[in-house]
Image (tube, rainbow, N blue to C red; front, side, top):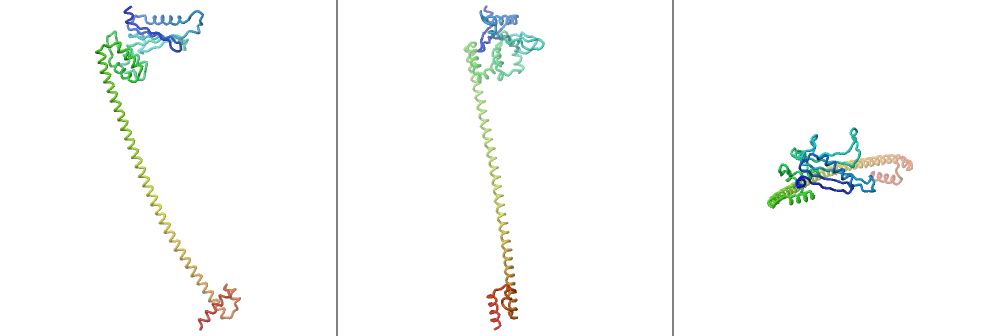
Amino acid sequence: MKEIKKSRLDIFVETENKERVNIEIQINNKYNMINRALYYWSRLFSEQLKEGQSYKELYPVISINIMHFNLLHDTDSYHNIFRLHEIHQKYPLTDMIEFHFVEIPKLITAWKKNQLNPWEDVLTCWLLLLGVVDRRMNHFYDDIFQELEEIAMEDKSLNIAMRVWEDLSRTKEERREYEIRLKQILDEQSMNRDRELLEQEMQELKTQKDELEIQKDELETQKDELKTQKDELKAEKEEAEIKRKKEETKRREEEGRRIEAESALEESTKQMALKMLEREIDYITITQVTGLTSEQLEIIQQEAEKNDK
């Protein structure tokens, strides 16, 4: 019995969905693992049904077998799952039966080949914890344990499990060594975090500097655009002033020509009226021909008489 207790651990669990789970951890190979798994499964499945109950009241039974030896020689996979299914078309018969076989040696081999990622795979992480000690070979996988320690810093449940595992398995001297190593890990993680924060601050400062440079360039561009607009407005104003002066000169010249024309016309009309007066043509005819009024004719005639004297 002592040897059995040392080499095997059985755990029975019932889930919230009433699934019955039997977990067996086997250290030594008794060469009857598959038959024993079938036998325990059948017992757990059949003992559900009490007198007077219906077969509909049966719930799935899941058998999980974790072995520190290789069992299945047709595959290199460390975790294999078996269910009942039709052998040709592969469709399932029922979900009432399920067997898991986990082979720790294959798990360690996959670890050594860098095929595992315990940071992303929770199941792999916990299986590695179970496989960190090889009692058959009396070997402790320190590299696995160190990585699990780092993961446990972020995984509370794994952290608790490792602390319990250590309390159960370590001497005072070993615990002291572990505490020293744990402190080193915490210090290293703290330094790494400080480095990350410093890099973030440096990146933020660089981003702020780049944004200030962009804003400075934008202000310079706006300044150049405002100067260009100011120069354009000044040029438009000067051009408008030149145009205004040209138009004013042209208007004055036209006004001068108009005045000259009017003066010439008035003088011509006046001379015509004088000649008609000399010929003693009556006022009515003269006003009709020249467009002058009788008063204007009298003034013209008075000026002419005055000049003759």
